[in-house]
Length: 388
Image 1 (cartoon, rainbow, N blue to C red):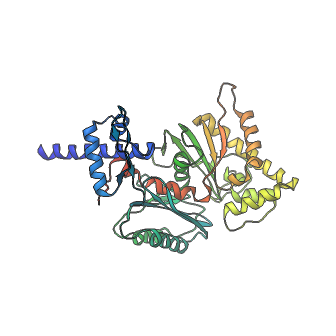
Image 2: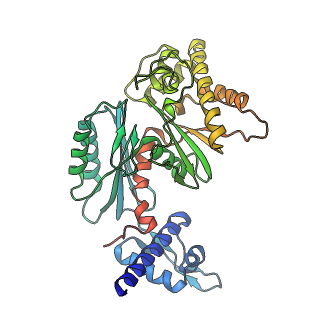
Image 3: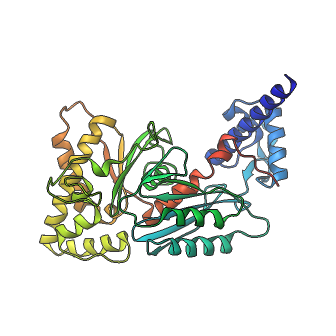
């Protein structure tokens, strides 16, 4: 009985610590009184937690400022660079890496052409060697991939567009950070999480993220959390039967949505060639569209098919905001305007709220950023303790 009671007390302590860390991330510098008010914890409890976090190097005190009753209060602030996470993405034609600190600041963000395990290995190793040294602790790491990832956060069940040997990927993940498990997550889910915490969907209660690369995927976010479904596969929208019913998809079937609006479908519609990354490609297409009516017409057809699928998803999910990422972002209103018109026409009732369509603000590293942010979850829930 004593052991069970001790374990319960320890869980409560960690949960309370997570609540204080979440408050500091959300509010910024805060006095102990402010933290107590925000978390609902006793001021004495907050004081003990802050002392433990200060000893671990996770927080520090700033200069005093007037308290709520005129007494000096010493604001507590997160110390960013002591604890880092690593977010990685392995996609069809590029790899990305983001290092994030405890405050949510991006320490490093980079991407390279190439979609092979060796490309990911080189980028991950260079990021770790540049930013992980004496006095810095890696809290966690997550790899984002364009495929179905089971709810064990490790098993890639299906990734039709990504032609790599998964045992090789597993071997790589086991050697990057010895003794630490690197989790695996769906790229659209990671990007959606990033947009809700850092990008175009910050402060939005119900959002849908649509990623635009060779494949098409979606992330569904409610109150800051990704909705994953029964097996972790929610959001695999690229294979809905929407758009050209004759278009061949990378999955081997015809008529999938991504066969009409994926990167290769968009390039076929405008008659242009692919460059090193989806964003570079889209930037070149957008530049051509400003002076070429044929390219604009091709993008309008893609936008119409985007709107068709979003109308279907809006009827089911009722999102407040839809964020279009990947190659969609540089194309902006060339795709968004026809998508908005089609979405408006296809929603059956005028009482339905039309979701606000927004381009992503995070660039090609969105999924890697979300993967890094997700790696902090155990800290902010209290499942993982920050120690010196």
